[in-house]
Length: 226
Image 1 (cartoon, one colour):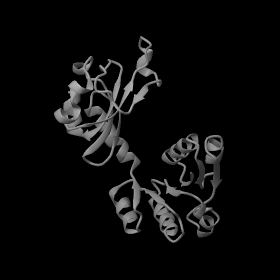
Image 2: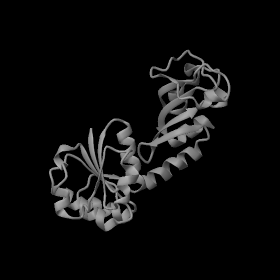
Image 3: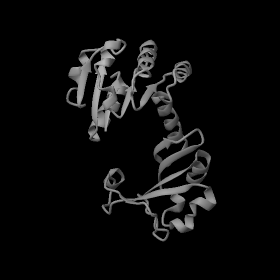
Image 4: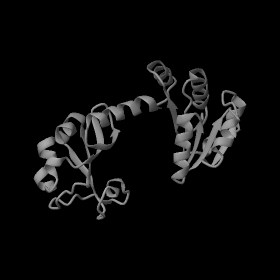
């Protein structure tokens, strides 16, 4: 897929580099020339231009990309101006970044339907990880539901999924089981070579180093790990 990312601060550059590493074509744009040297080997293409100028936007292949992401944060005025101009272009998908409630309100009034809040989302996910003592990773679905990757609670090591009975006892659903590699020692905790069992064999006994990926309410998942 092809993306244009406007604003190559920490969030924008990280997103651009990640999308590029996943095989997508990314055009990253910033008005600071030093960003080109820093990012030229990390993303597909870097352009130095001021997108608050109408003629600069017209020079971009806006209709040929799958999405345009305006990742500008602190300069709210530039963010609003660029997004308002993009609304008048034939862009398939526009994603804006909001850094506070006022910023979000203005973007919503402009008709921007997809708004991301990276700082708030990161804080929310970190708070969920801190609340769930066995959590390795979490993803917030909405204000009530999360997806969590969990280490096996000590009470359930050596038990089968059938015996644990996640859905009936705790109201959470299993997404997958990550089965730990066979090697022994501390290194197996950090190994990326997990076998992923999407079916979740109900009779297999859970090992100490296995992980469960589940979806459910935060309170329900917390009750399971506690």
